[in-house]
Image (cartoon, rainbow, N blue to C red; front, side):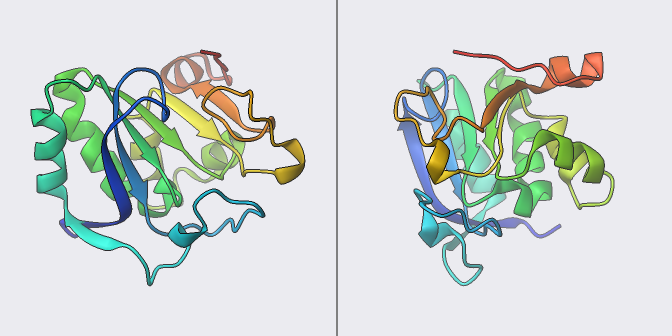
Length: 169
């Protein structure tokens, strides 16, 4: 694994990308190309900027006011091994880890042993917001989601019970 990650951007403090005050990493690269996407500039592999994983981890660990980290996009599952490395590296700080993806939980479960880093990332996420953004299901009143087809999944409980457990905040 390279020691760099391709990101579209970083928010060191956000209240809208998950519960609490969160550090947000916006992955560069997304293959879903959802119509009406909020971040279409994150789709291309030609965009974004390379960041050192160690520097990102240091920024997260030394931020005294955040209580969680969110991986958004683009799609973090396109660089799953790198996001998994970050998630594992910050576990000692007891941060919650949220991750947005255009893939469904079922698709991830079916492919987690085939796709590089997927199983590792999944095992280091607390909340997964899954599914592509669908304009026809857009709902501005949904908390932490853009369209009603997207689900908020408690990953540790889902893995432990071998069935998907959704949550609402």
